Length: 265
Image (cartoon, rainbow, N blue to C red; front, side, top):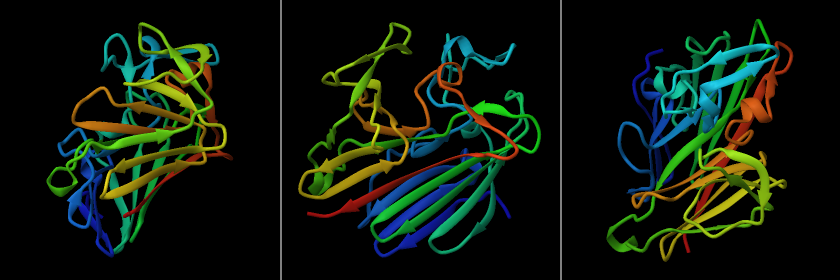
């Protein structure tokens, strides 16, 4: 199938899936109101095969050092798959399945599969990374850009509510130092630990409450920009290829999921 945009619908919810633009969710509209920041680099993009920054763009696999392009100098950021064109494996009215074969600069062959499923009150994203050859470390995550202010009759800024067990101390290089802190007040560009699973609520007062959940225990919250609030569930912290590698093997793919559930007051 082609990599043209796909529109999913369920009730008054509508999602735009963009296989040709990095496998991202280009838009999510509920009751006709767009929840995601618009633009080619925004929406919600998958972070694979790593999340956030890799220190100096380098990670080790055994004794081998691999260098990734420094697309956020002095680091490499957010993986490679958001820069490529995915293929649509199948699509129905409310679900799409996309695939992406890992290519250079990533040094290992593998396949990423993403399932996007829409219901009247939820969007579920499920991703897996498989290898048919060498094992390799990897991470999975999602980077949604939720609009801080929806405008019109919903013109009050979004409120963020979550109860993390800890916050990763952020060094001057924006990477975790390895020290855990009691959660500090925002604004944030920080990684938090939620051992019971990610559970973060965004509320646009008087209009909509949206809950981001995931069985994973790591979430990055980024709200330093006026236009958007980012809540990013992921399988490990920034620089996790070095500090907490998750191994993809021929027998055991890496899998993760996140669900956004919304309700009106």
